[in-house]
Image (tube, rainbow, N blue to C red; front, side, top):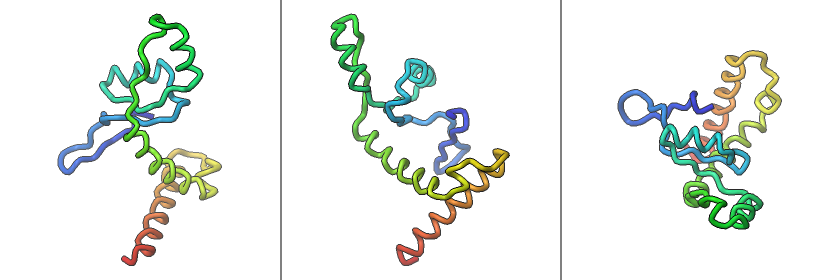
Length: 124
């Protein structure tokens, strides 16, 4: 999924390497962290409680605690709410579309509907 990331700036072509990637605890694997570290991307993924307890139990052999930016992780909530709004539309939630192009078109259509609804709600 990271290969598809494009971060647009005010000028120039979009960057393909974001400053940070936020994920939930399901993305904590060593492989994911190693991939992000290799590309010099900050991982904003909290450590699972059972893994932290296991690491602490092993003492100095347990390794270092996972670095975690609480402020950046809280901003992840905005993205999660948008994903939930997208999934509220049956076509996106069920992934019924057969081709990636039609699925992407459905995402664009649903995002447009959310954007327009936000404009009318704010009196624009």
